[in-house]
Image 1 (cartoon, rainbow over the protein chains, first blue to last red):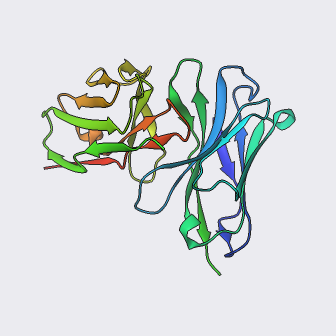
Image 2: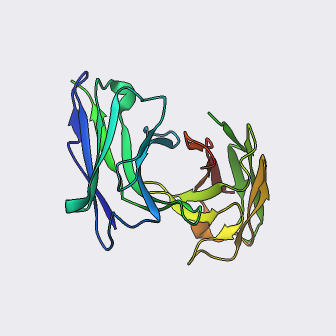
Length: 119
Length: 107
């Protein structure tokens, strides 16, 4: 299971910080990457970033330069930081497991957390 | 970035019908494609991966096919629980990209 946590309201120009806690399994399992995907209200899905337990990370160019993904293997969790947010960053943010070993895509998802950017 | 284009954007059908959704990639992605189902207020659910492999626990009424640039998701004998939005996603190359979604509505 995956569970997102973090503030539901962030002010413009500030930093959005979210954490995803992984239960029922190790974040260090060799088959998996871990990722963040977001969905603005009423719109489609956008992949933001993915990370391996070693720290190897990939970012979407649409947010690169503003985003950092990190992993905390000791606590079985990974995190997202997105700085200089604007109203366009308002979205439901999902964390998910990417099974790259079997080329499965994102096979387990958190329930998502709505982050609103507003003063 | 590889663009994923789904068609149609929306679709009306009745219980018992069969429907097909198409996903086209702007460049070849082999079979590195997944299909997801998303219901309102829920996270997406993986249905199909590797273009045609049914995820464990998913009804056999769902099937996928294709390789390269053209892919299809077929749902046969629609049930009420199938009315949702469907997304394709490529993971052949970063950045991973999703189609814009196909909303399947009850007629």
